[in-house]
Structures are given as structure tokens and as C-alpha cells.
Length: 64
Image (tube, rainbow, N blue to C red; front, side, top):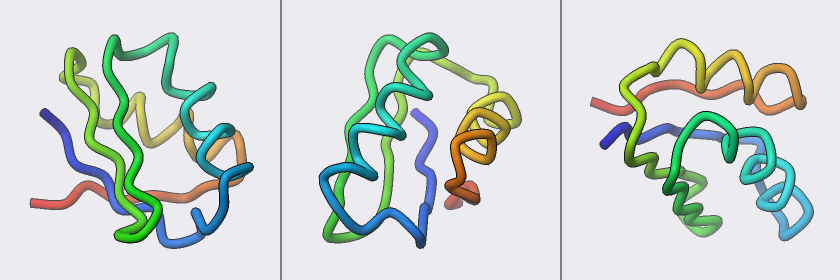
């Protein structure tokens, strides 16, 4: 599992955007809006996930 911090993710629209961006890259994406975090299971390509989020306007970082 890869845990990502996405500080600019604040609403339901943001959640839908990041889910859509990550869906082709990972079979399971769980978004926690309150913590502004995403847990990704089924992918070990953290750099690819970060690029996908950046492309849709959500800079992110890996936690841990």
C-alpha cells in the first residue's frame, strides 16, 4: 500500500478528480478527505501516481 498526502484535496469534486486520475493505475484507491490522504493498493509505482495527481492539479507526496 502507498499512502499519499494531498493537501489541496478539500471537497467531493476533488475526491472524484483524484479517483479518476488514479483509477487506471491502481485497482483500489481509498480517499480520506478529512485527512487529505489517499491509500492506494495494487500499485508500487509511487512516482507514476504522483505524476497522475500533478497532471490533474493535485500535487501530492508520499507519506512514510
